[in-house]
Image (cartoon, rainbow over all chains, first blue to last red; front, side):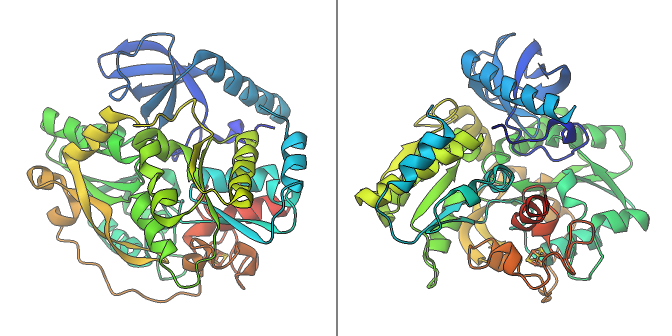
Length: 88
Length: 353
Ligand code: SF4
């Protein structure tokens, strides 16, 4: 029973509590790029100790606030994919 | 995790009278409305929304002051999108309307974007509207430190940042407060840790569960709260262990306190609460927009909006006489109908389908 509307996300300026985890695909100091469901996004990783490419993180207003265990992250992303499919 | 049906059966089996539970997180507000959890729970269990929507807790006089500042031709206001349609005390007035009148207002996704906007516009002053709770505050602080390190002098932050604990204490001190358990905000807890909510059972005997954001998370957390209440043993439980540790994110906490310190602040519906907001530390006050532009708040002007009662759990959205009539997401009277995390917006969006 996933709850959020993915389709509405990219246009929104206010992703205060974005629950979808991003996977880090590149890191340059405190700047990183994360990806989820084919969507890429710049973010800062200041608050994550030793971030690594492949880590899953929860992002809040442009900052990763916590790392998620991979299994959990994949489960959350799957839930999001369901929504995306449902919304066509 | 047990299935929704199993959790609901377990809830129905608990020996309970009337119980009010409160969530204090805009994302929980939305998730609860969207998932229809309210209608699945037994009739004696009510879920109320608390002061968890950052835009909604910002009082009207602050919005009015932002609207006046936006008209200064040398200023660019940088804001999260939710703030744009929040009405001031004059019906129809908002940053969006001011933009149509010539004010420069830019939507940003991260406070760092606002620093970059300042770098791209050296002849303007960029004022970032820093709304949010402990989750947003560390990033806002990091952006200020970035501006300092890069020598960006035309950037400042209007801090409307707020802390959850003092608001919960103020709520519980209200004479008509009638809530028997708190669903604690998972992302705030990611930053401040389980320790940030231990005061609820320890000092107030108040059951508390830190909850994640999927419907199952919320349902399970509701069950854990009800079980505590039925058993008469209040404590703090953490349902969101996948992201929340006992101590929280210490790096984020350190960044926050390198930039900000607690100060007395005004809340919609709760009034002035000591040490409930975040102001600049002395050494970074040059980035304080309120100081830089000598902001003076206008007197509060009453409006017909009852958001103040809605975000303190005293009124449900649908009980507001304007709800769905004079006040709709297209033509909002108060912030609770505008914000994607507001209780009135959630109720409007998901009752009608
Ligand atoms: S329905 Fe509109 S006017 Fe009534 S409390 Fe909600 S936002 Fe305010």
